[in-house]
Amino acid sequence: MTDEVISGFIDAVLPNDSESLQTLKQFLKANKTTEKKVEDEDAEKFKSDLPETEIYCYVVALMHMIETKDAASIHLSEICLQRLSSFNRRTLDAFAAKVYFYYSLAHERFGNIRDARQTLLALHRQATSRLDAIGQETTLNLLLRNYVSLKQYELAEQLRSKTVLPSSRSSAQQCRYLYYLGRIRTIQLEYTEAKECLTQALRKAPNNAAWGFKLTLTKWICIVRLLLGEIPERKFLSSPSEMRSKLLPYFELTSAVRAGDLHEFGLVVEKHKATFEKDNVFNLIMRLRRNVIRTGLAKVNVAYSKISLNDIALKLGLKKDVDMTINSSNNNDSEGAIECVVAKAIRDGAVDAQIDFETGVMTSNETKDAYGTSLPAEVFHHRVAYCLDVHNECQRAMRYPEKSSNKTNETKEERIKRLEDEEALREFMEEEDDFF
Image (cartoon, rainbow, N blue to C red):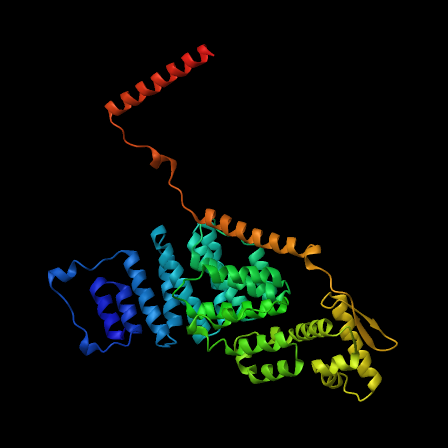
């Protein structure tokens, strides 16, 4: 859409004496020579002075100005908020939520997102007191985005923990809430809950739309699963085809973690460092170094019953990394650092082995039958809990008709017939009771 098209639409639906009409025309850079003033009686029928029509025109103008990268959209959004405060109509709740969104988006793109925080907090309190569900969940998500974008995760968690979510929630806002909650949990090292939140958000996202949102979710799920010690499937990072090229750095990262080679992991991180920093996951990827070591040690543990610590360091590319860390050529310090790394992996349960510190050898324990342990039951319990969660969410999302709608408008003859049938049934039941 162009400025001329939007200006013509506003001229067609708003009265000529409307203040909002003049305000919107000042912000829209339409060519005045192309504007057509319609004065016939038929065109006047389409004009409306309803507040809903006025706010809708503001929303259309804001959307267009943000798409065209017009910094004046910040001022227009503030004017629209002032205009909204003069009305008290519940039919404006959905339009108001859109205005809140574009107000925050305009500050994020053309100003300082921190400047919008106080206004969003006031709007959230107002929506909560008015029981405005759509406004409450919209402002909550905008505030979470405000805090997360500035990396103020503690403030975001404090706000989230003290907020009561509305009972009826839209699917789009719920997806956004789960995404921000997943990011907060990831930073707080609560990877299991973060994975659940991000997976639910991806499942609730639209099937054939919101590709950018689903791409971001896929990247974060990949990182969280790697931090949990899981390896994402190839299909997860290669489908759909619209996101395959964007996920190539994460596919290479997953391959490096699966191989357990620190040298390859370092090359992938250095190669795609700019991409990871742009996606705000570089700090999380640096946490994966321990997982790479644990994966490599697990492979060595399966392949060798006995192996020296120096050979482990050479196979995993760990010796060079340790020498660079301690900044010393002392061989004893290097071997001691390698012993610490292997001992920590054994203590965490990643490797089932023992270390002979005198000879510097790691001895693998006998492999146990997995079906003789509690692992199958734990996996089965996890899958059953996931299915029950999906079932409960579906039940909560269902909408049931009110009890008053079940009452049919029966006629007098139908009512008499129903009462006669009920009386005959009652007499029949009494005769049955007397017989027994």
